[in-house]
Length: 183
Image 1 (cartoon, rainbow, N blue to C red):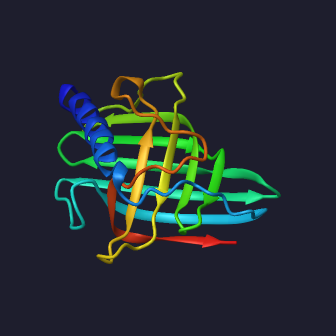
Image 2: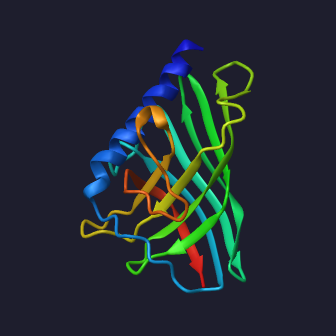
């Protein structure tokens, strides 16, 4: 149990640190596309350490979001599985879906729940009752032919903040899966 709690803290720190270091990367200001109808479907296998596989961990993001007549709807699940300690799953409901002028797709929303399941243990709600804003930004393929994603959540202890409709700096690499946007 202590290892899983430590893993949660380390993962949060690593993602926040990576997001801070990647803040100077291709994070263009979000200029929403004036569209009344957008649909985003994505399943991606991610890595916070580089573009290759990450033994011992599995980080995935699943998004089903849409904007109909300017009203965003949808659900996002970001799940981090640690083979030796357990699983952390954050879920949030979409409050914004935008596409900026460079083609970066951002989806944000308040976290509805974070479920921690220790290896061999029972799942429990982490930070129950707290609903910080979270966000994912899917960036177009870069010059090195790598796909990047920004993932973060507002965390006062880590001095990180996700703003509704704001792009999240690239902090992760996509190593499998796809993201599909329909306008």
